[in-house]
Amino acid sequence: MAPARPDGSGPPSDVLIVEDDPIIAIDFEDRLIGFGVTSVRTVGSVAQALDAIAKRAPDFALLDVELIREKSFAIAERLVALKIPFVFVTGYGADARIPPQFASLPRLQKPCSSDALEAALQARGT
Image 1 (cartoon, rainbow, N blue to C red):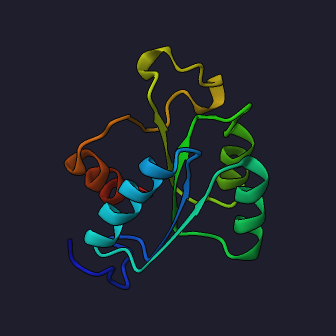
Image 2: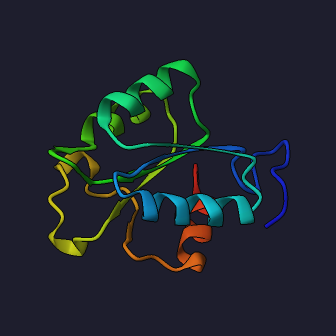
């Protein structure tokens, strides 16, 4: 994947991963860096994600729907308010209970292929 260009095409430069499974988070991080993303931050909870966003808003985010004892929808609400593109990532497929206001947003099924992940990055903001 080519570096980001001034027109916003190419990979985002800063991606926030919200994922409570460290193995999955490392896999996403490795693949994102391979696509040309220059900064990848990983957090495992809603509080950590909201804090990370407040400190420095990412260009794109991957949100695991089901975190330990919580769901990532508060993060999604914040990202929508800031107009930051994101993709839900879930191991539950069509069974994932996504609130109606987010039902039309893109999601990736875990495990996702590198092609699907790269396509999600390319499609942001379109």
